[in-house]
Image 1 (tube, one colour):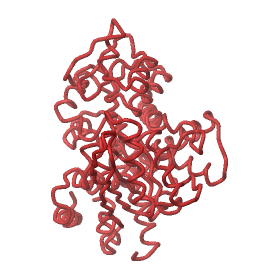
Image 2: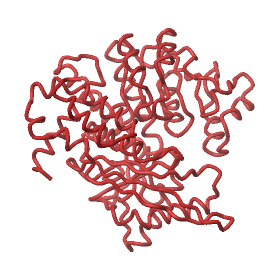
Image 3: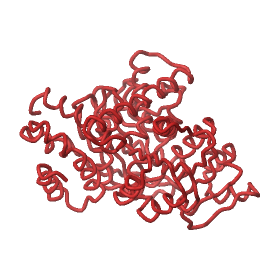
Image 4: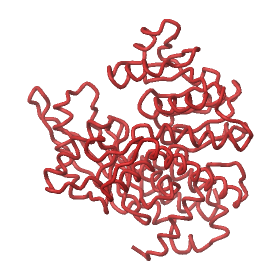
Length: 445
């Protein structure tokens, strides 16, 4: 890290003890900004780095609700409204037992830069709760969502803060949250939440957007070396929304997707994943991935296995943060991987990222590669504001154009600041410059 930036990182460590994921996200950005602050000293002199690393607002509150047995349950919820220099706070809600303030701050910090890269007028924020929707009835999920929104609603608005879904928060949860928001406010403010159902203001392609966008970015990276996804052997981690639709789009572009995973292990299908069966198992039956292999005789399920041990040319980590470490990266490198694109938020550890960079692998960080989800959320906001509805084809074309633009911004900034081909540096520099200049324009606020 540049000596000009080291004191700022030490301040982050001191002011945010124990929040390892947040520290990791800040470090990754600051390590890229040395050439920027050397060329533009005013970003340091005017304390832009300190302001950028300190959220504008952090909300923590309890969520009491009653389960089906009549027992009172208490969860903790968070909303970190990190930076609104470019527009209203925009970022998802995550329901998972691992959620704590450090996770939400890491995600919110990443969201600032991801949103800037889309070129859309949206700021960065994130939220969530340690509530686990797995195994809960629809009625329990509804009561929890209604209780959460009873507190959160006062901090939201289409010009203030616009949440969306994330891990554990899909169309069901967004519906319950929006219903309670409408009930409390007596306003049909459809632009206050994105990821809504198509029947009440949702956008075509929103379900597919993060996975599709990751693949569009990967295709753009490969084009720079005269390659494409067609005929490539692809491995995807995870089997949730992002993973399924990354596999879907990769197959449409001619790739052979042979493996995916869940928290219990991975499935290998050398003939190529049966996408219809995968969607049935995960989206309809909500079953473990082992059920896929039970219904697909030629597929094998490896309990407790590591999907990155499956040889591939393109790897798409789409599960969760820090899922791919240096050992896994080395295994992928040894198998001849050409490109890695993060469909999840920060799924590769810093050590894994270095292995890929040192090995000459095309590597796309999550803030660039998975920006398609929030970009399509912004398109949903546009449609809500204009009382309009777009076709699937039109929305997908808008998404593709946005992802091509994200790739171009990253590549151009990397070239300009002496790091050609380094998408991590390019993504961090391009987005930082946009947000920092906006912050300076708005004064000390």
